[in-house]
Length: 193
Image (cartoon, rainbow, N blue to C red; front, side, top):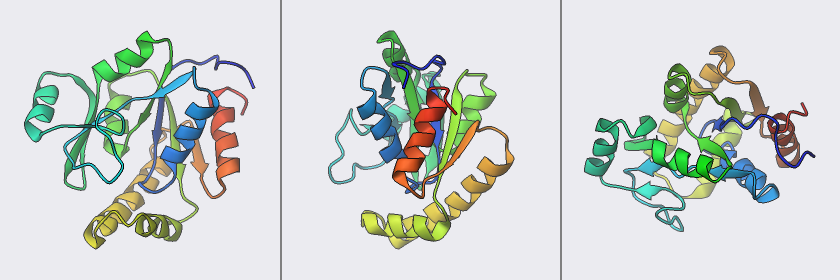
């Protein structure tokens, strides 16, 4: 494996909640620690158990979030299951200033905003084998209400349709086997497949 990708554009990695994006991203960062860094998004939702401010997300008030948005400080933002999420330009610049490749873990609305803004990046979509597997993963977390699970599944259906029809993503990875899915992601990132 090359020590660094030839293509150093930021990576946009998207997919339904529970598809395993976070696991694949963390494995890429852990395997190549001086190459990639995940942007830390801002959100107005409450932290889940084990999440830390500034590491998992920047947990902010709606007022603070709206100020960032109003000032044009977000490269993308969206509402998802009742909370705002967005990636700040400052978070992206901080990673680029370190000479690392930023990874943005964002959802469909954010992907559309970034793509139409002309932001130069590479786009990967991670999907589960099927929605039944996704539902099992979401329920297995034990962190969300039945209403939130239903909303995430409905959104997942729309995201899967978008990924298959919009022509935005250079690679769609089915995460039905972590080792194989990771090898496909790493191969794409390093220009080997």
